[in-house]
Image 1 (cartoon, rainbow, N blue to C red):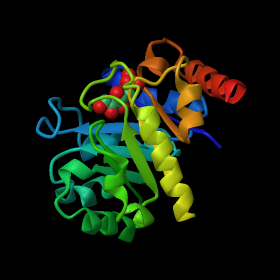
Image 2: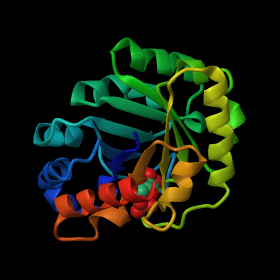
Image 3: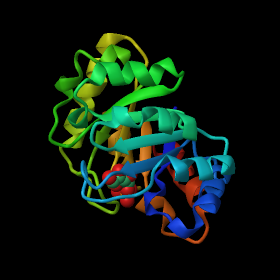
Image 4: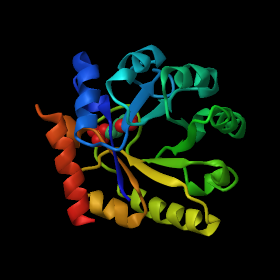
Length: 220
Ligand SMILES: O=C(CO)[C@H](O)[C@H](O)COP(=O)(O)O
């Protein structure tokens, strides 16, 4: 089952509650929420208080991607805010295993994110602990960028590693995903698709989510 996780980074920030509600009405599988700290990435978005404020607008999972240095400092805050999945960057964590255990100990799904220049082989020791791996297909920090083609080879290698492991680990891709490349991304091994600009450049969010999901169903 391929899942769609619309990234509200591309939405109208003045209407976040309504954006989340409409995204769920379009039958998105989860909401992808990008947290940026202005340190790990050169941009700042929102923190746990905003996530807590928009949590009541939908019951589908909140997939919280922490683009934050030393994210272990804030794990409890994001759990308390209502995160269902928390992903942390391998490049931002000194004690990655401890951080993953911390997230899982609260019955929240845990994942690791890799920047485009980080090889999937860096996951070898931590992969059995994970619910999800997120491969960035753009350099993190901004929406609306172009998909980096070398992600396809990384996806194939990662799908192979997960198969060898024999465990169920979701493989999510984020950045520059649209109707032109989503079939290739899924064929290479992704089963959770993040899309921002391809979903939210519209007045009718629910319809846009439905259309993107239907497109994935027809073409994949
Ligand atoms: O994490 C991100 C950027 O750091 C965004 O989620 C990602 O870029 C999705 O936006 P778009 O589909 O517009 O590329």
